[in-house]
Image (cartoon, rainbow, N blue to C red; front, side, top):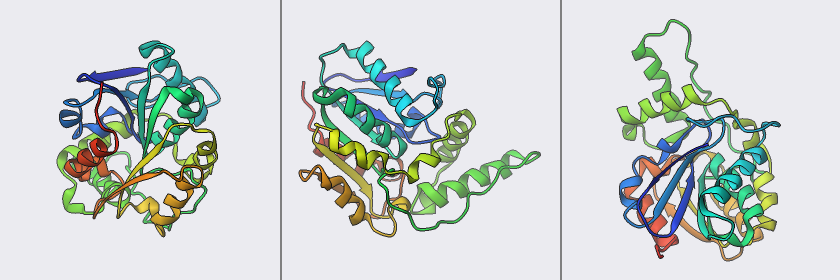
Length: 254
């Protein structure tokens, strides 16, 4: 696994989404690294990290995450752990193993809650022989389908990051989004759970409240921050509001 780190203070580990990498947090690093010792790994099979051990399932990635945390921080250091989308699924599974070593678990736009999302537009397909401009249009369209609420917020950097992350993605996380694996894991998580969502996150349709109810089932203390008008990739699309919400939920210390 490849880990990148910035800043000093209490350790905060953030896991990116499916077909992503540490660059999912690119617009958050300058602010958050002023307040935390920020650790942004590329999860196994994504970004610059090697594939996990077989079987290629979320638990295998969580096992690798826990091994990395053990190696970097030792067996007793407390960490705050967060994850976006598929990264939240992995963070939840990791928190089950880590137990009291996770002082807070932050879930951002997570799936695997056992709920069916509303149908969405199909993804555009990149085809052999496309020009660079045609391929960029495909990535832009797919960001509009899933990741952003307002197409006007999709800039050239977001398109580039999407293209690079998809190119390097080898672990296929999408099939696991329809499971209830994270909902089940919540019963065994000791850490207080906190959550951030964009109010226009497409994976929360038809009901964001139904998803919050599932998170509250075993964690009635659930602390919620909603970013008005933002979509799934809320940390990028509404970076300033997201950064403020995260700091509010996870007060820096140490």
